[in-house]
Length: 129
Image (cartoon, rainbow, N blue to C red):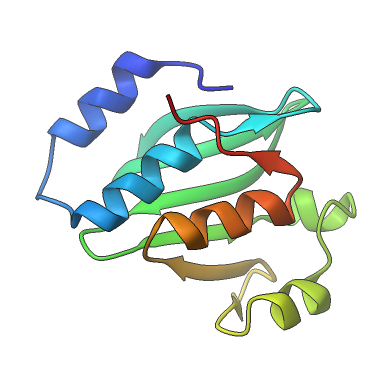
């Protein structure tokens, strides 16, 4: 569930233009629906101005960082440690995924189809209006 739709729109209106396919994918992620109550919060920190944080029970499970030509998606440590996703299975399912120096899994998303594939992998749905 998206926590702050106004902040999402502010994110999207600030900064350099984004390719349409990437923008559509970001909106799909922003409006994702989770059965377990995970929330989606537009955020920013440091030089990252356009990010979505996916949080549940005080844990920051996933991130989506918007760039001009792709979204950098992270399966973060709390999700991996809780067994919500498994590193090796995720890398097999998403062959372009990489493990970061922090032990998180990241991949680049370019379009709606890839965004929906990630949501399906984490048991969420496209809730885009």
